[in-house]
Amino acid sequence: MLTVAIVGGGASGVEMGATLADLLPTWYIPLGENPQEIRIVILQRGSEILKESKSDRLRETAQSELQQRTAPVEVLLESEVKAVYPGAIEFERNGQSWRLAAATVVWTAGNATHPVIDSLAIAPENRDKHNRLLVKPTLQLPEFPEVFAAGDCAIDPSNPQPATAQVAYQQGAAIAHNLKALIAGKSLTPATVNLRGTLIKLGLHESAVEIFDYYEIKGHLGQAIRLATYLELMPTPARNFVNRTRWFNEEILKQIAGV
Ligand SMILES: Cc1cc2nc3c(=O)[nH]c(=O)nc-3n(C[C@H](O)[C@H](O)[C@H](O)COP(=O)(O)OP(=O)(O)OC[C@H]3O[C@@H](n4cnc5c(N)ncnc54)[C@H](O)[C@@H]3O)c2cc1C
Image (cartoon, rainbow, N blue to C red; front, side, top):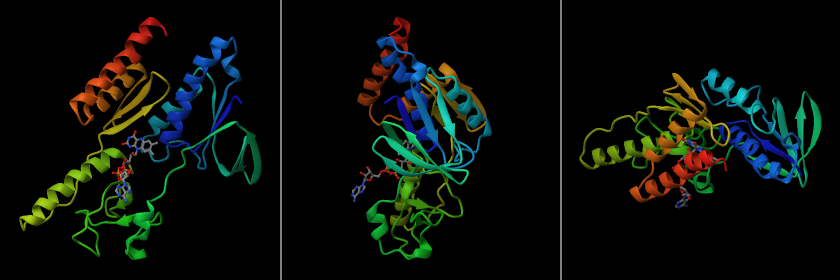
């Protein structure tokens, strides 16, 4: 009952593991129990966590923060999950099959393209191995230049970008710009994406922030920057106000009050 298996050591798996490792003890300790009995296990197929990140420093920070949580987080590398059963998972490691008893299994090992994208009349040579649509630098489909694609469902092979919201957001603006150009009979411009960095939550109240993948700020200050960044991205002032109030309460008032 006290073991949580997290499948996948990407950003979502690491954030989930670190957060649960701080959160579950806040319920378990008041019962008079030992938080060390809680076991959180991240199973990652490859040889390292956060493999999409270009930053080795971020990987090291995440590894060390996972070890410092209130409940221990184990990272099992080179471990490929083969089956999930009620109460257990099966995985392969070093050519051997293993079973881990876990009442809770969290799947974070990626997602797939939407069936609508799969069903489009786009030739296989204009798709990648994940079935995403290949687009030109202007984000037009090669076969249908009047159709644009962006975000998680598309990939420009000449300038591949990670499947993240900050990329989708900027590509959306590029499409709007190109649609206006198309209507005005002007030439289209290639989409440019500026990666502003990586924000990763490493526990209930801590984060690591890689600014332009150059500077790293971690701990409580990293968390403050992460929250401020998300606030800045809220689509409406009303939502901004609601989240600002909630986060101020959760991150500052409750911590000062020690609850
Ligand atoms: C757990 C998780 C955590 C993540 N964390 C981060 C993060 O911290 N930072 C970050 O930058 N990125 C993060 N990402 C990635 C980010 O969410 C995606 O890259 C981003 O949402 C892609 O945007 P999109 O517009 O391509 O697709 P989506 O955001 O998936 O939008 C597609 C929309 O189309 C709608 N839709 C689908 N089919 C139809 C249809 N037939 N008709 C009409 N509408 C339809 C869907 O309902 C959906 O709203 C995370 C992803 C996951 C899964």
